[in-house]
Length: 159
Image (cartoon, rainbow, N blue to C red; front, top):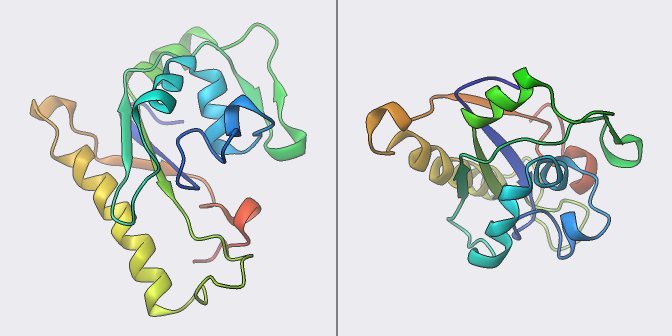
């Protein structure tokens, strides 16, 4: 995880993962972020389901927990976040955008223009928010992301 970066999580339309997500059995990237950084949980109260052209950008959440793995292999790290992890987390923003669930029959083909344009619009919305923040020293240009819901939503890691 990079300092002064935007950590991008692609999940579904609800902050913290699926309905229930972090508060239920969520073990993917977004619920893990929320579990390690409990101050992100406030977004569950103040943010509605994301619209087609919306992204959620959150900053300033401190990291208390740490984990390794994802999905069924996720495990908490004894002792929680290290001093370095806590310092890095304070300099990061967390962006959540929803990804298309390609496992669903109504989803457009992943390599179609419609699907690619939709995913790019979501990322544009989030990155615009990160790059247009005021004052200018709050802007984040570095981006760090995982595999964009490839594990959970059947996406192609190459795309």
